[in-house]
Image 1: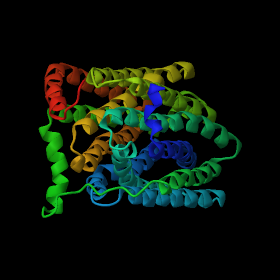
Image 2 (image 1 turned 180 degrees about the vertical axis):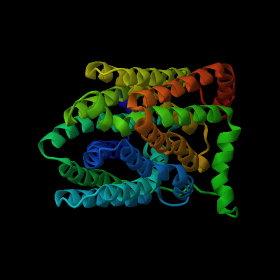
Image 3 (image 1 turned 120 degrees about the vertical axis):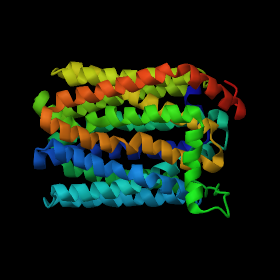
Image 4 (image 1 turned 90 degrees about the horizontal axis):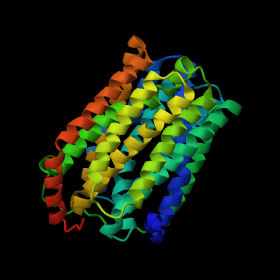
Length: 414
């Protein structure tokens, strides 16, 4: 099938299925951490704090991680960071099984996971061209399938977490996440060593790091798409951090309600990645990104205004769709036009906009929800997301013209 054509490459296929197992475990832990923190503290602010420390390293560490991934064997870097995340999950499981866990244990371990993730993610994304044999024509499909496997985990993990939390408690979710890392570590061990692409000998580390920022700023499509991505990521994914608060205070539900709601967003994201994977060219991708950004904002607004679980599940589908299509679509455009020597650094900047801004939004939303309530706070974030989509739409002509020039320069037939 054309939609899975990148799986014809053995290295990418092993990586894909290893990630599939690991990411289900990751979402098991993500849901269980939020549930544990709210059970221990009954505080939306603490939910925001945990989400903040878990993701804020991406904002500050990513530039250094991207530079490192351009200077060392990317496979080794990913294996080391995955092993650290596995250790973190086992420590959290032991503390919870022994009933020793406190909110600040969770905060510290979330920070450890965030630091490991900040080094892991740029290297993993930059691996993709090598895993498909350097064939740039299949890169958009590989990026879409990489997002697909992430969102299969995002769909299955929360639903499974809801059941496990109700029957067994948080500790089993943490233990299963730790075990799941063995699958991706095995897949990475089977990969060959990756070539080092850095070729900036003689230039300072500072100059090499800033080269990625300079490229994004000077490339108009990259700049416009990154600004939109940063705003969407600051606003739309924040529902995840406050979901335990919404479930208990707005929807009057339990852990299974939590699983169904987060799984609904995962289903929307899954549909978005399938749509991206089925595309045969780059034509019209920026229009799709723009529409997806608007869908995320409108879905979030509907979610914030309803007290009905079925309506909330329906509303979260376009939120999940919009976030992943905006993010994966932007990543596709960037990776198609950037030079390989800058790839990991530009991917790191992309991750700063996608993942690094989300904790700032979660922290702000958590504080605001404590003052005015979760529904009003989230409505404001939804309107900001919609405003970003409108601003990008108003620059559509400039964006299209500049992107056509970039595609021609890169030799891409759209």
